[in-house]
Image 1: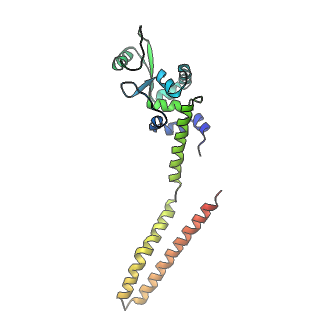
Image 2: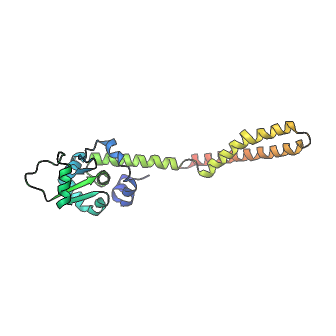
Image 3: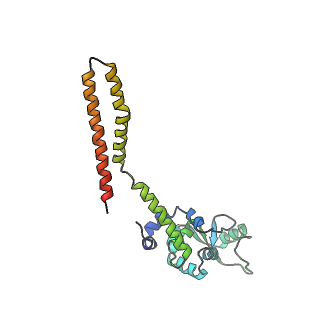
Amino acid sequence: MIDENVLLESRTLRTSALDRIEVLDRVKTLSLLPDGLHVTTAMVATYFGVTVEAVRQLTRRHREELATNGMAVLRGADLRQFESDNVSLSLGSYPQARRSLTVYSRRAVLNIAMLLRDSEVARRVRTYLLDVERASRAELDGPALDDRIDQRIAHVLGKTVVPMFNVLIEASGEHQRELVAMRDGVGRIEQRLRAHHGRLRRLEYRRP
C-alpha cells in the first residue's frame, strides 16, 4: 500500500500517476483560461486555497519537474500571442505590459497537488490518487492466471467432457469399457483440480 508521504517524496510515483488528470475535477472544479488548456499561478493558488507566493516557492523548488509536465514561462512574442488569445480570461488588468507569465497545464497542476503539503485540496487529490492505485492493485492481485486456468479447465471437464463420454458410452457397445475408463480418468482430473483450487483459497485466507 502506498503511503501519502512516499507519494510526496518520490518523483517516480508522482510520474506514474500524472495521467489521472481527471482526479482534479473530481475533487474540485479547476477553472481554465479561455484556451481550455492552461491556468495561471493565481488560478492555481485559488484552486488549492493557498497564497500565490506559496505556489511560486514550490515552482522554484521543483522547476525542472514541473516544466517537464507542462509548466511554461512565456515571454516576448509568445506572451503577447497568449495574452491576445486569452484577453478576456482571468489574467487581470495590467496597465503596463508584463514581462513574463507562468502558465500551467492540467498535468502540471496535478503535479503540484502531489508536491503541495499545506493544502487540504492537494491532500484530497493525493488521497483520491491513492484510492485509485489501491483499486487497481486489488484487480491485479485477484486470482493468479494459473489458478484461473485451473478453474476454467475443471469447469470444461465437468460440464462438457464428462457428459460427452456419458453419451458415447450409451451409444457404444464394443468400446464401452475403454470409454468408461477414460471418463473416470477425466473425472479424477477434475476432482484434483477442484481440490487444488480449494487448497489455494484456504492458504490465501490464512495470510496475515
